[in-house]
Length: 280
Length: 276
Image (cartoon, rainbow over all chains, first blue to last red; front, side, top):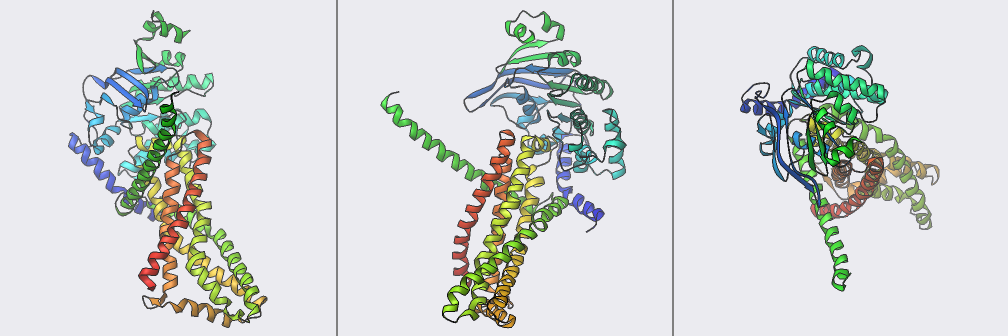
């Protein structure tokens, strides 16, 4: 079997899931995207979650406004990454609600969860690129899986995304993740997350393990995407300096409870004991 | 600690352990069920299936040839010592043929593929799990069971019988090598002896010896065990790179035990269905 015929067979066999997702989208009212809603992009209301005896979130309520970047700060094990998993519908809360663009993600059928995720892009801590796929296949993964776009169009969109994250497409597209530096991996991870032009971007520790110069580059990139793609973003981090640089608002999580939500300047001026301890 | 609490601790431990086993069993069979369902319904990842058939099937040909060759040779050599005393060396073909096709071919092939491909599956999926690649699939609305497990499951089920045929043939040829070189039997005599033992239990579908058929039914089950066990422990991996190593070890040990136990029960069933 040639590579081309394999590709055709592969894509035909995958059509099933695409149909399922498309049907879910149609049920939600629009052919290709969920309808944009006014107000908050994400609304978390009194979220509680425990793993066994260990309570991770104890009544967290937090909103993400349209177009803003919100950083969630906190120490290790404070429940920051759990919030991202709840927004993605990968975890269900024990109580409380997570509404994404007006839809309660923990109370809709799986096909609608899949449809809701079409509007989200996730950037993982270690980039989570697929080891066996080239940069091109990694970035184009979503488009290959869920669209009927021609290969030329997918190629164009992959190039656009790589351009946006300041990578030279011709130099990196054929490389495997193992051949990339830490900073390049993060940028490819971001390119993969934005290739389908989501309206909500979720970053899990985007600057951890990077040197100060690369950290600054990634921070500038997050700011650039906010304006150029008009996305709303939640950044989970413990890097205070980065959070203050990129965020409109900052939230501080301590042992599963939100102890502060507000602008960076307000946080600096806060009299709260834990906030002062965290900033010290 | 009071006496009642001291007595309760081992009971609680026993309770937790049993609950843990029950949960593992439930999850294991759930993964098996989802894989069977995924094999029979869309979406199906054809390219991944071909890649896995290459990894599991083509990649294992070398070790199954060596396994078959040395197993056949040692069987002929060991039995020759006993049979020579009774002047029965002409029956060596029967012994090598019967033991290889009925038991050693399927079981040794499965154990070798477990060691090679089963551990590889657990390590690969485990590494994907700890580096969040599995989570990345979820976030992109791709079911990891369909994308990662089903191609390995189908590939293992298709490849194991073919690898078993290779082991059987090479083992019989290995036995023949010893029979001809060391015991001065003719090729014709040896092969006739192999044929007679295979024909003894009769034929199914007119031309296929029942022994050979039974020996090819087993690898289908063994393939399923290797893939599901490897993928199960891979997807359950936690605890970083150390966890990946543990997952690979657990996959090989569990899968080997399952293969040997299943072999016994399958043999019982096949004898009851095909021979009795």
